[in-house]
Picture: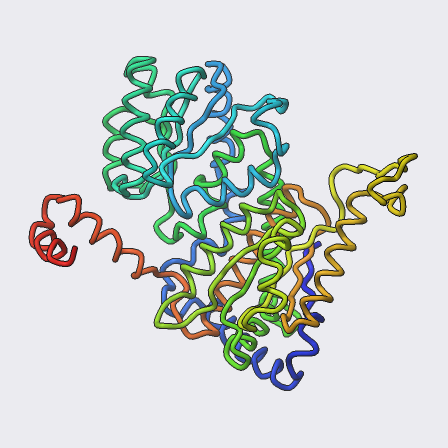
Length: 446
């Protein structure tokens, strides 16, 4: 069961202040619950766990899985950017064997990601991989014209058509896109691709429980139904308005630290390397939802103990502008005990008989105490173990809490007008048709 522990903030905030922010968060909860706030046309994510479990999507995804298995597909390229890939990426990284790319022991196709950058070497090296593997592709884009993804898809589509022929390519390419319009939808209709719909009322960063995340995670060999059941369990818990609702508590504490104590940076930390990409998903969720109107907590992330040897000094003694949110895992999936060594040259025999995880938890506790003593408040989100059910709980908890927190802050959680600025400049510099005047103006600046 997912729990929230706020005791790491006790020495920093007064209970009366916290209670004031709980009331603000409860008012924000009402806005989210009644669906009458800014961005209320993008609230389809709220009931995705129950709707996806009850609908046909899982069966349709399994049909693709079986089709590609029959063709011997052993490499699936997932093309997308931002919310179109981070949810699936973080789930696969969290659930997979760390060295699966080498061992290849789970029997499922290897899933790799493209279309999230414009790195030429990256795309060339992805093509090197395609040259020696049996390939299929999932392209995820609502419009089909997002530059990074569209460039990668053009290259991959042409490669698959050349290698397998257009007819066979139509069975090896799946599009996750708009239900009725857009370049990718039009192409899918033209070429006969199987398509899945990105709901109009679900924004990209909230889309992991749609086919955007469900299909790649299933193809990679994981129990998507268990993820959805974990999310459903959290959906039901979040439906209860209460001061004990952990989304309300999380939203209240982080907004209190931000507004009253100048804590402008939230560092999501973990002591489990498999959660590194979960932090990347979380960074987009909170950064894109709250960073607007000259407001917002800057979302950062560190993986401990690794980053304690790089960022630890600043966190301990640098400018006191941060707080930490720890994602803690009670039990590892496997066990490894440290044995005694006769020579004991490393001086570690005092650890003999202890598990590596026990040592890791002592490092976690020692770090918590040190950082609190150094002026860094800490919130803790804990799950029992890192499996599909618990990952589903994490996804839904942070999504729901994000909506409450952003409304508490006073911003629209579901728009992202700022992301268009770089695109306009890029299109002008690339001399895209229709940007002629913008091209003239921007070239005066460089």
